[in-house]
Image 1 (cartoon, rainbow, N blue to C red):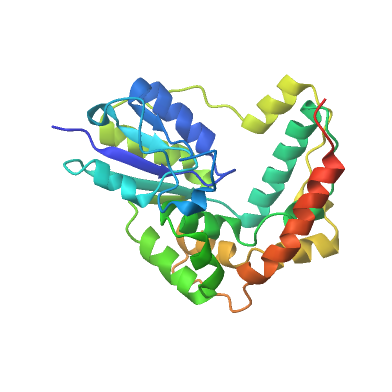
Image 2 (cartoon, one colour):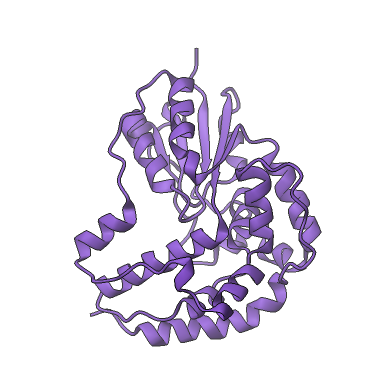
Length: 274
C-alpha cells in the first residue's frame, strides 16, 4: 500500500520546528522542506509561493513542511492520500514568542533590541490568518488588500474544515503521535525548545518578555491587531464551535502604509550586523 503524504502548514512560532524534526527523524530524505519559489522577484507574482522542485523524487516524499506549503501541492501526488495538518496558537503568546526569538537572534548578530510595540506594529494585523490565506490558499497580495474580514474568515473556515488534524500548540505531541500511527513509525526524536536552544547557543543575556510585562497600551494594541487570529485559534485550535466572529477586525489594507514606517524604524533601531 502506498503511504500517504502529509502537507503540514507551519505558521511561524507554532511548533513547526518540532514537527520538522519528527519528519526528518521518521522519513529522512522523504521529508520535503518547502522553500520559497524565488528570492530574486516578489513571490506575490506567483500563485504558488513554493519552489515546485523537491530534492527527492515525488514517489519518495512522505511529508512536506515549513513556511511555503500550499494547497496546490496536493496535485503533485494524484494517486496518494493527502493528510493536511496545522497547529494554531493563542495569538498573544505567538506574537510574544516571535518578539523574544527575534531579539535573541538580532543580539547574537551584534544588533540592538527594540520595543515589543514597535515589533508588533511592523507586522501585518492577524498574521496567522493572513499566513493561511497567502501561503496555504495561495491568494495574491491584491486579494488580501480587497477582501473583507468576513470573506477572509469564510475562506479560512472552509479551508480548515477540510484539514485532517487541526490543534492547539499544546497538543503538538498528540498530533505527532497521530502521524506516527498513520505511517506505523516511531515518534521518538530529539525535541528541544528552540528559543532556549538559540539563547544558550548565542550566549545572549535576554530575559524573555511575558504578557504581564507589556504596558496597557501594548496589550490593547495586541488585542486590536489579533481579533481574527483569536477567532481562528479558538474555533479551530481549541475546538470552540460556537466562537463568535469578531466585527472589529483591523483593516489589512489600511494598516499597510503605517507598517512600512514601522518596518523602517525597526531596521534603523536594531542597526547593522557586526
